[in-house]
Length: 370
Image 1 (cartoon, rainbow, N blue to C red):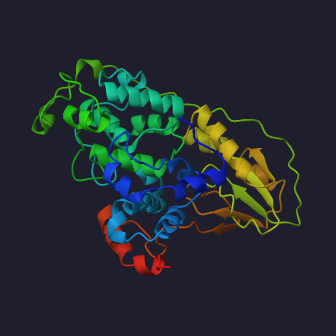
Image 2: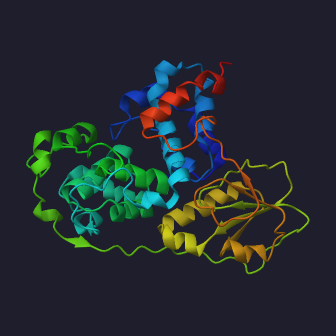
Image 3: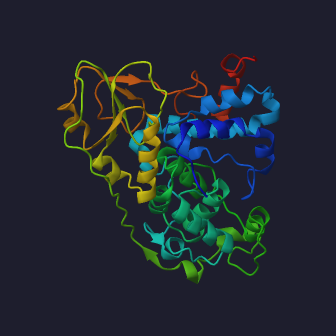
């Protein structure tokens, strides 16, 4: 499984999307999914950009609504994060029911749960930095609702390996599965996994009817729990940047690698990798390698590993530009708004379905027919 880091190739992938096939097969591990999430998460492309390209082919909303909803889910999670900020580190709607541990099951770390599809999914995550969304839910359900771990530690573990690491989408999805950001926990039994993963396992701890999940005992294979120790290895950068202080400076980071951002303007362009940021949100080596390669799509970009305040000493502090994001709270300068799928729908709505209902009101004005 290889993820290109060429912007032109990413755009070509968007043009090849079959949104109808996506809607019909996306829950299957071998379904017609786009694998664009790493580029959305890194700010290389936007949800609106994808929707525009796909809708330009003449599809009607009713025919591809499942595809558009999945794009909108990512914006919804981002809007919640924008409002709640670090509160998404805590249980949002209610405490996670019946959790017993703040750690993570070693069987998950070692891909040794005994559920073949799940263990293969974990190995794939660790090797390639990607995992199917349905498999993420399976793993989260086992970690939180069977092994009774609080969602936070296993959510950090999964984020660590993901090329599409997005703390908003990741944390809120885990909370949704664990029942702290939803009305009930999410469970999947072995029949469900066999159906969507094309396996035929029987006699596992998940081979039970759904009504038995409320009283399930923790399987022995999940009994051992460990404390996470996740660290980021950052590259070294030049001590002194080549800066023209007469020009504006554009700041890029882990969540913004947009190669088209004001490229008509001559500017200093800096990829800022903050050690403090990665202490809070650690990621694996392959994720760092991925963002460094993606940054090469941005002409004349320079790497700065350090904190924003240290960067100020080398640039003109009166002409700094950066993009809107919940993690950019310490930045100074002109904040540029991100491109949302529906610009008119902002804030924290109580559910995705309330968010989507509001978005639909603006569909025709946002995506007028060509």
